[in-house]
Length: 474
Image (cartoon, one colour):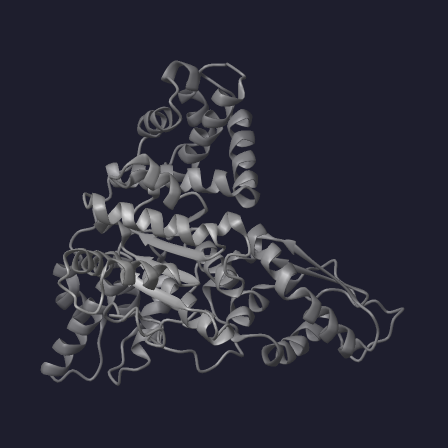
């Protein structure tokens, strides 16, 4: 529904929505494409807006703060120019707009390929070698990765400006876009800050270089040259850090490198397939790696998988029926590389058998063995309670009891929230599992944690770590 028009202030626009549509066409030319797609297009005028006060909603507090810092001034300027008078602009959080992140705006065209191909091999000595496919514009945004994407963009916009974002630790299962984000940061920084030195490396490459330098195998890189190479960079991007588990000397070298860089105001971004707490390393290393902002990427939901598959198929001549795309999106695990493999196999089979298009039956015939039977073992309330007790070092009696100390109440609220999110249990059922508490108590706890997650990074991270741990163990 369009926002109402203030009849006391004449305007050439019929509604605030029309004003915003016109503003979008100008803003697209005025702000970087990544910021336009990641922030501007995720905003929408709220019904309370008028031509004197434009109230823009955006899906979460993190994006709101980022938009206020980087977009508000230009929005005020553009809107004021269009209506030919000063306009107040307020950006506010509106969770109902979260779905905007799942689809591109109707006017957006020529989006780059969004399906990651094979992981790029980047020579960290040649900083211009970032894969051009891995940009912020080509990163498919959904509810499961929007926070990670916006955090990565914030770091690229202003490396090391916020100490709480350094290091930025991005974690999630294989094939969900961690490498894409690291590459996007590198490409963006080189475009905006060409004077800065950027190094992207994998843990394997870092290890090989360190071993070769230490043993004198590499004639062009001794230990001092190795250290200088990494300690003179402005942004260090290191991928797949979990593969350093058990490599104590290499971990220590990376630890000292990160300490050195952070102490001199340089930005570090780390990616792994699990959270820092789950890495099998000495606590002093994991505490350093996770001392900044931790963000996770969860597998994409159906709508995002459908969008990814559709975009991938735009470059293919062989048409797929909507039912075939829906089947693949439904059966896929969410690993983008696995989805690409399944699509490649289906296309190859269809071409070999001279099919004119891919039907659902054909997709099922070829891909059913790849996807297998999706058997998901449900997470139980008992499992959640046990994991929360372990995580917060409290006992089960206190968790379900009536003690009102913060160190008990907060984990209890977290557990209730997780029960509501990860199980099919009703509020009364959850209340009974927590010592017979009223369903309104559970509702209050769930709403409180939801609110805290949207504005307190540490609460968000704790919930994500617990969720990941429960899914891994299940």
